[in-house]
Length: 417
Image (cartoon, rainbow, N blue to C red; front, side, top):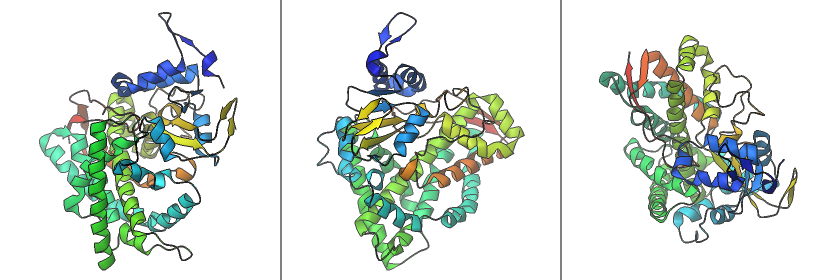
């Protein structure tokens, strides 16, 4: 591994940049719009370095995977807040919520919470959703067919996961659209350097969602249903069970993760295929490759680009010492395009084998809903290609100005049966 202080990079014009200078480009709108060239330069300059914001930054596949799976490197919400420039995080309900979330819990509390939730989030429950998922997709595609196209995000990529996660949790259809808007506001807190306006919106969204889930939970206790909220109420392990506050927090988390990651998988994935017509044609000709295609699309342009950890003790990592309390940022989008792990990684190749993208993380914090997101992406893209013989972009899409969550503002297409 190479240390940043001894790893300047000389560009064609003769300018020398350190890894910190390159990393700073990701804090700009231009850098966030297409971070992959910056990731590549970071990896070539210093695959492991300590940045000026105080956090270690990793961009290599093996390094990122090792950190995500190392029990000595856990979660530290307060450290993440400080690294994000939010040392004043206490007093903001949206930020205080993160400190109690499963996303930022460490064992033994993480083990307890995940074990209880897993009893409710079973493969059988996911499989049960699949047939209804297909019906929902075709219903959502009807207006696209009638209009000869439209915005694929509004037509399919947004409403599909909202419907599916709503059905899974037992959220009534009439409030799901409002959850979509509130979730989008709340996820801003996971970005580096969230602004004052965004933080105020996130606070309001968090209050609304917690109150909504509290009311819904009371209804489920009075009238149990065959849904995951009821299952979480009934989940028990050795006499232990989830408290009301824990179930409310888990409902907010699952709805948010279940919606945001899947929306971006469908949007980013379809855009990647439309930008690579030979790959799109191959997938049409050989639809049995759809499973591999989903893994490649997850690798190529993943929904979640960064995952943070903190050293719970002094950790000697290669030639570097992560001191206890140090923040460590694993850049998943960079790891997924590491040439030491994947041949020709900047190319979309749905025939690629042995794909293990880090898009859903790794280790004990591997995404609970990964199988559900994969199923939705698979069914959505399969239905699109089966139903429409022609799908074309009508305008170049723009990515939302975020780094942690990577997704499009819209994806306008023309299509015909």
